[in-house]
Amino acid sequence: MKAAFVYLFIALCFIAFVLYSNQPHRLKSKVHRNLHAGRRLVIRKLSIGRDSKHENVAFDPIVASFERKREDRTWEKEYFQEQFKQWSKDSEPGHTHESAPHPQSQPEPAEWDYKDPEDFLNDEEHFNVSSRILTLFPLIDNHPSDGRISLDELQDWHLQAALTEAEHRAIREMEHHDKNHDGMVSFAEYLPHSELEDEANRSMEHGGVGWWKEQFDTADEDGDGLLNAKEFNNFLHPQDSRNPKLHEWLRKQEIRERDHDKDGKLNFKEFEEGIYDIIKLHDEGEALHSSSDSDSSARREANAKRRFLELDKNKDGFLTEDELVPIMDNLHPGEAYYAKQQAEYLISQADTNKDGYLTIEEMLENPYIFYSTAFAYEDYEEYYHDEF
Ligand SMILES: *[C@@H]1O[C@H](CO)[C@@H](O)[C@H](O)[C@H]1NC(C)=O
Ligand SMILES: *[C@@H]1O[C@H](CO)[C@@H](O)[C@H](O)[C@H]1NC(C)=O
Image (cartoon, rainbow, N blue to C red; front, side):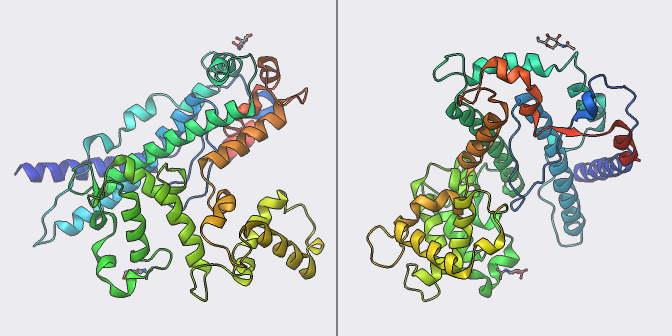
């Protein structure tokens, strides 16, 4: 009886949610005062899921928190629909239903409707980017607090924010997999049974069950067969973890994927075919800008050879796992890598006197540079045309 009510409740929520999400965007009644030159701060729709592309983290924690909220809603919607499908399946005779969605993950249209956060961001009375920068400056300028922000400080700022975001997503994803709600994820919970049972699917190839299992076991630092929140986060983001075994595992994968003759190391040909193009992009930085004919096949061969020799420390003609260490940031960029890029970009844009540091004056001169993840130049008219 009680269960019937729960189902009814879920169904009603679902219907309400579908109705709500199909409603057209309400016309934003407020006329925004700070559409400087058609500039409007927006909250990005971040793509979610394992294979989504990397997005730079927001400079301002307030913007990040709005983005997170929006992302959570999107995730909840997907999660909820999946649960609903599962429930419909489970409620066929012979099935028992185990996991109702957590009450907190149910949509609350009323709260979301309460204030459009984009209106908030674009209302200078509430959200003044200059005073935000004045507030944030001392928090970033903290090693040492010398009145100027260095590349290191700005990189750290973005890195900490990115790691916090990643952890938040990992917890959310963990909730999704943790079917028995014990706060741990087992391998069977992580991969659906249909895949586990498929023998052909135990392959060690990238994405095969054997491959996932190995990554899972490597992330399982205490070896209890279950991943706790920290281990699960490391499992999802091995390149950002502090587990040296995971870093080793990543390097092993790099070799394994390209090692056609299966000797456990890469010869020049395997390197040139599988790795050179990836690191070339990073070496040249702006490979897109270089004209394609500048890379004739002879030149390409010579460059590849040079890079191979540089990496092949012991000069035995092969690259081993350890010899890949210097290029792992290129093969598997982690948050530290992106945070550095982002900091370099912001400094290059805002450092007017080109001394390599940002002062509060420089930042206030062009505050919107720091909101570049969050602003769009949008013609006011166009904005509303797009909406309808
Ligand atoms: C925004 O903040 C700056 C610095 O605190 C101040 O000078 C400016 O008047 C503020 N702008 C608005 C519209 O409140
Ligand atoms: C594993 O099995 C599933 C379901 O049978 C299939 O969809 C998937 O493509 C398989 N994956 C691999 C890597 O073979």
